[in-house]
Length: 190
Image (tube, rainbow, N blue to C red):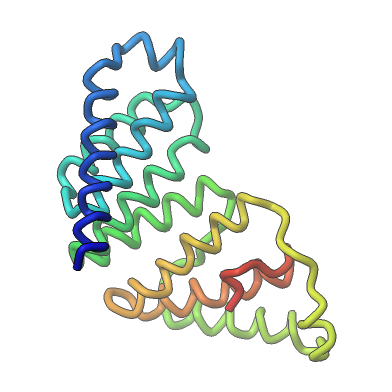
């Protein structure tokens, strides 16, 4: 119990520091200190989501989406929003954010339907048809960090898909397998 209280106190302290930092940020800082400001807002969004302060987390995400310099800088914020929505059991909303984040990563998510699930299943079966156990065990490590991030986001798609859209959940799992076969394995490989 004391460890949990200590961890909660630590998170509250971090949230407090991040709030103070955000209070000091001016609009011009988004241009002059972009990387630092982006990190502060992303960290704050993550901390507030973890604390269950979803409205505050979403406010941080909105600011990131509004002020980010490029599409790639929106991915982390979209993932935080997806996690927040999932934690609030808004699985359909979470899946929309998952789809958007994957799109920014260049991962095409098939449309969610039984027919598409069967097509992707057959595609995956063709990819592994002649692979041996040795081939699977000797896949190279996934070195493309964007694909590792995509795998993490797809993992959320699998979990929330089972709650909101069973086809999306199955498609997410198949896309994870396909990415593993194309880019190598990582700690999230199914």
